[in-house]
Image 1 (cartoon, rainbow, N blue to C red):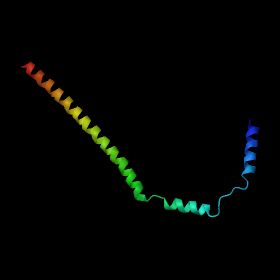
Image 2 (cartoon, one colour):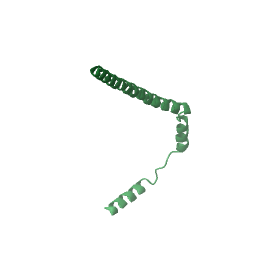
Image 3 (cartoon, rainbow, N blue to C red):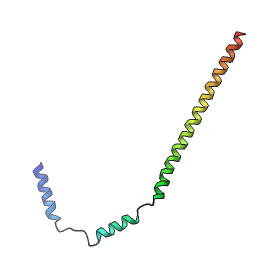
Image 4 (cartoon, helix red, strand yellow):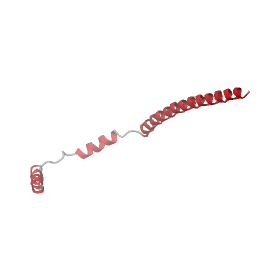
Length: 88
């Protein structure tokens, strides 16, 4: 199996020996990469959007926890109030 792979790779290397990049290819690639490099503010905006989502999710969880806490407090005070009336 390893011999078959070695033979295949050797044949591939022989068949592609004359294949080379066209003149100026590396310069064109580097120029294209540099022209498409995003500005620093794009990264800040992307990070800001993610943090906005986290803040909104935290607000929803906070409101839900607050409502649940208020319900528990109301139930506890109603029970205590009823107990006080029973003691009278």
